[in-house]
Length: 228
Image 1: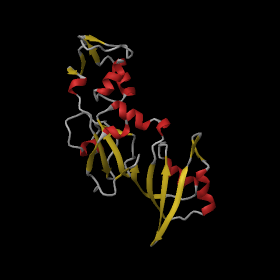
Image 2: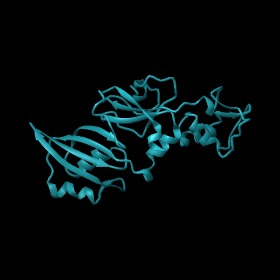
Image 3: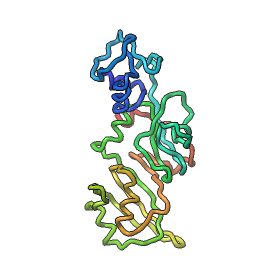
Image 4: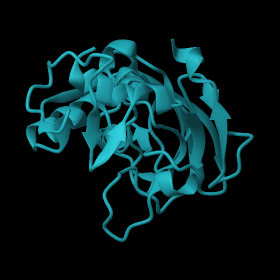
């Protein structure tokens, strides 16, 4: 197995991040710094990261569905901000599958399987993401239906998905949005393009996994085999 894939399977990080660890000289094989991420790891090799030997035999893959509250970041960076991964009780190195911005709540997967994380975030897998959006400004039907065919959202990027108007309650209007991609601030940019503004954004479902029965800040364990 290639070194970068081996590291990802051991839960060290995503495969892309593992490439960076190798390039930075943070991985050693049999006591020597490894610089080739294509190196084929054998059963007799001793692989270490941060002075700790890592092995596939010691790795138990875990996958969690978290209902992320607002105010938490989807990052492993330790910069005194509240991290979504810290809501999970685990001794493993965890990271989120994709991201929700700090002001967005809802469904986020957390795992120690770097290979699975990479698989679920790659555009070719087209995992559906379902959101509830709250706005004040209404949008004409003929305008928001254009998103189904695709619209430009700036930065030479486009967005394509389904928007459905759910209801108006008090001064607020509620929408359901279904997307398969996950560009940076995609939904907020879509609504800006439609001359409206997102007041509140919640992702209630990712890849068929629903958080409507999970309290904010809580999670449940998922069998990773459902994505194999």
